[in-house]
Length: 424
Figure 1 (cartoon, rainbow, N blue to C red):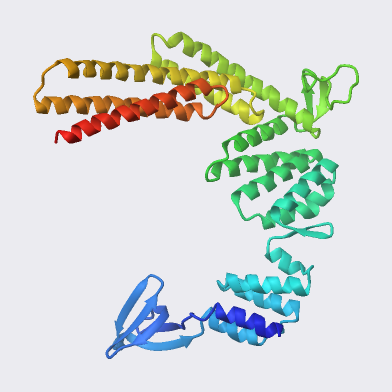
Figure 2 (cartoon, rainbow, N blue to C red; figure 1 turned 90 degrees about the vertical axis):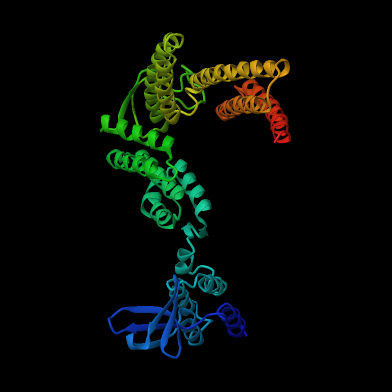
């Protein structure tokens, strides 16, 4: 009964399959597709189109089974109550572009044997303890084992399985990061340095690039390189609010400590982030001094300062957020200044339009100029909204003003376009 039901389901999926024939030409070229013979030509349909050849060019035609047809034959010869036999067929189907049939067979295998290792691996499942888990669930379990100190099983079993099961760039990067953390906590400092270096490169090459991850990983690799013995000297207690006398909050006192301790690594990253902030603040001061006399040079320094603050935030999330908000406010102010110029030009044109007699052509030209000013102002407002949306809490007023002004601009533009169309 099982065979009849499964066979019917699988073969139904193949009902529209056509034969794949091989056409061999006298010059040695070979094409695989659907062959039809006409009076004096031979036609073959291939994935990229239809080709025709004179019969004199054809050496032979070989009728071949398609993967679907071969699957039918293999299915008929397979013992569907034997999970290993079904697994062999599922593997063959998966390797011959029959993903749907392979999935149906894997589902059958797990009904026959819920712990069939080959099937679970083929489906991307990872075994942790006595359970087979999908990637996301297994990754969370692995994070838990890291916090529990189960480093050996992570390095020897779980992480290799996760790496093999990772099907996306995001998953692969997550596994690399977890591997680096595990090596670091296991005091395998040289291995951890290499892993974080590789992770930085992989994150930069991702599409889209994982810039923050790349920056943080590169800095960890650099810290490990500079402290090859795994020891780092803290200049102050970490976190900075750590209790001086006892207390239950996890903290590290000033002095030498192992980078295998996550808090020590955080402290090292914080030191590097503070260096980036100081460099950024210096550029900010220079930009402020130039803003009145040389706005272009000031803009370049603001951009360089922002790069330093972004690096700091990549190492320690939001440590430089206030400075980045300040730069964004200044960018918005500069855009507002340009928008105000267009707004004044628009008002001047509007005043002339109401009091000055004009020929039709001059009138239309004036309206077109006004629409142009509105378009430029609209573009400026959209840029302001794009900038402000990165910091919706801090720049709520800038965002709201831009939204209101944009609505006014759109309404005025519609009126002018209607007026222009009515005069054509």
